[in-house]
Each structure stands twice: as structure tokens, then as C-alpha cells.
Amino acid sequence: MKIAFIGLGNMGGGMAANLVKAGHDVRAFDLSAEALARAQENGCAAFATVPEAVAGVDAVVSMLPNGAIVDAVYGADVIGHAPEGALFLDCSTIDVDTARKVTTAAEAAGYAMVDAPVSGGIAAANGGTLTFMVGGTDSAFVRAEPILAAMGKAVIHAGTSGAGQAAKICNNMLLGASMIATCETFRLAEKLGLDLQTFYDISSKASGQNWSMTSYCPVPGVGPQSPADNGYQGGFAAALMLKDLKLAMEAAGSVDAEVPMGEKAAALYEAFAQGGSGGMDFSAIIKTL
Image 1 (cartoon, helix red, strand yellow):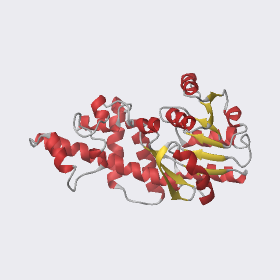
Image 2 (cartoon, one colour):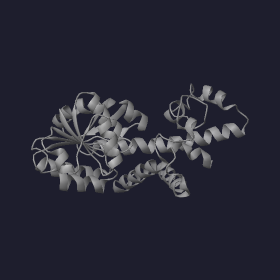
Image 3 (cartoon, rainbow, N blue to C red):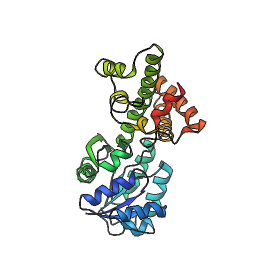
Image 4 (tube, rainbow, N blue to C red):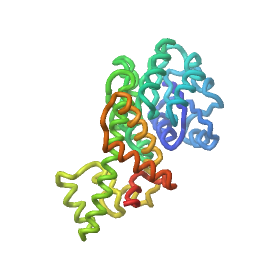
């Protein structure tokens, strides 16, 4: 299949490479010459503009920083330039309203589209083990599933247009809050004189166990390998967690939902990022506790 891939950053670069490994003809575009060069090394064909990249393709996959960019790129450079009937898969994490707006515009022009944000960090993107939460029609999902499966371990249809973004926002609000709770719990255990490995061995098998502890422990040398064992580098940047938490707060406000734990998590991550730590993994917030 001929696939255009737009946005080759920390996540998109690995995703595009996995599409090549799956046998697809990948036509890559990014504003960064360095990112394009890496994509070429991974077997992609590089293009100077989005309209050139999407010409003649069967599908377009995008991984872009925010909703405004997604709206602008699809509105100006993808819709009307890709062949009518092509499938669009936006894997960016953006607000639900923009996801629905872009999908409506695409469908009106004769395209099929899904919003398919991901769960998993850079390692999962490179390793092809992402989880995709997909919003769109049943028919669009059926077309999108094999493409997404080449980049992930799980592809789940969350519902109609925008449902993928809703699922991602809710998931990451839970992740942000649970990571903070996990971090403060380890700090309390330490102050109470518990050996942290022993505490991990107990809590990871008891009612307090959670993903932030058992799969992504914020304490160096405890649990499986995680960014904590690499100076909190790599993984999922705190600035990106803050972005997702802000999206969650906007979504909660739009439906009058009470999210006190989400609000507290957003405030703590905002202070952490503003303090100059936005580029560190989000588990590094343990340093503030």
C-alpha cells in the first residue's frame, strides 16, 4: 500500500519505519531536514511538500503537535490533494472538537477518516507496540485497522468520530494522576524507613498496584527498566503530559464534569514544566516530592 506519513518526530519517525518494515511504500514529509533524512535511512521516500507526499496514495497517516496544525495541514495540503477515496488516519493527540471538524471536512470531500491517538512512548513507537484508540465509522475502522496494526500491539475501536481522542484524554488524565500518587507513595515509604524494593514487591502484588508502578516505576533500580533508570530521559515528556492534561481539563469543562484529581495533576505538572523540567520524562515529577 502507498502511504503518506506526515510528522516524523520522536513518535512519527519510528511509526513510519514500522510501516516500511510491514512492506508499505511510505512517502514521508516533515519540516525538519534531519527527520526526513532519518526517514530515508529507514526506507521512506522523502518529499518537500505535503501535497507532493499525498499525491497518488492509498492512505495518509499524520502525527502532529496539536489540533491547530492538524486542521491547517488537512485543510490546506491534504484534502483535495490526496486521491478521492483515500483513507486518512490522524494519530496526533488533539481536542475532540477539532478531530470531528477535520473528519467532517474530509468526509464531505469524499474521503474516509479516523482519529487514532496512541498510548505508549518512544520505545513503543520504535518497537511497534503502541496501543491505538480509534474513532470513526465502522467502515473506516475496518480499513484503518491493518495499517495501525503494523505499528502497534492493540487497535481498539472506541466509537464514532472523536471517540479515539476522548479515550486518549481520559486515559492520560488517569495516568498523570496515578503517576503522582505512585511517586508520593514511594517517597512516603522511604521516609517511613521501608526498603523501596521491598515496598515494590509488596504493593505490586497488593491492592495498590498500578501501571505507573509495575510497568513504569519512577524509582531508579526498582521494577522493570524505565526512564528512571536513564536519568528520566526518553519515554513520555512531562510537557506532553501537561498538554494532554490541559486537553482533559478543556474537555471536562465542555461537559461540566468534575475532575478534582485531574485538576490537581494538571497544576502539579504545569509547575513542574514551568520549572524547566518539561523535557524530562513525566515520572521525574518524583523529584519534586
